[in-house]
Length: 220
Image 1 (cartoon, rainbow, N blue to C red):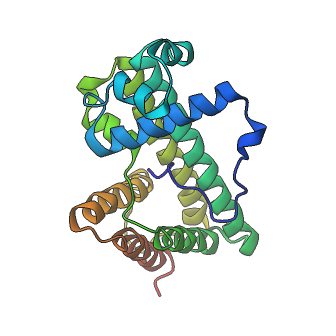
Image 2 (cartoon, rainbow, N blue to C red; image 1 turned 45 degrees about the horizontal axis):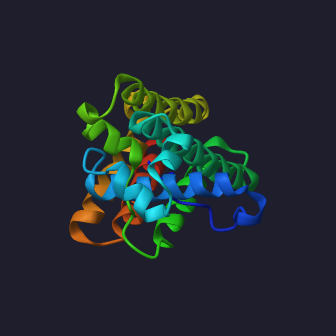
């Protein structure tokens, strides 16, 4: 979804805390993720990655068994970062309100504000890139991407179910489909944002989702 982003107030990991090998591995993954989002996995070569990071090809294979292993590590890192980011936003929202509906609405506003603060158009979602280009990846990588979608669905379905228990929706609603709607809105908005070169699209769409959820459960 948006794991390339970092919450505004999270302290950055200092390079001094990483070993030389860890820093090299991190640089390789950073260059690879940017390249995959920009032009696709198949068009991203090991040669360009080792040239960009200033290491030898044997150095690449020290860190990754092959290109598929790199893809697996990229997706795992992306999902982990995305989960941490969503956890942080959810925690901030629940600190401000213990009501499930109000905290979810706050969460959506925080997400919209985070998108507004991007200096440029959102770089894209790595999980979506894997799904679009599934033939370029092995089955394990594709399965990781599908699992990430289900993880996001489960996260929001649990929250929405608690909302519905307290605030029955004003119209008959499929809560699983509504849980998917966050990912649909976020990733669809990223595509539209990139197509129009308008970085404000994602924040605007998140606010529309906020308004829809408010009307659905609160009616005001």
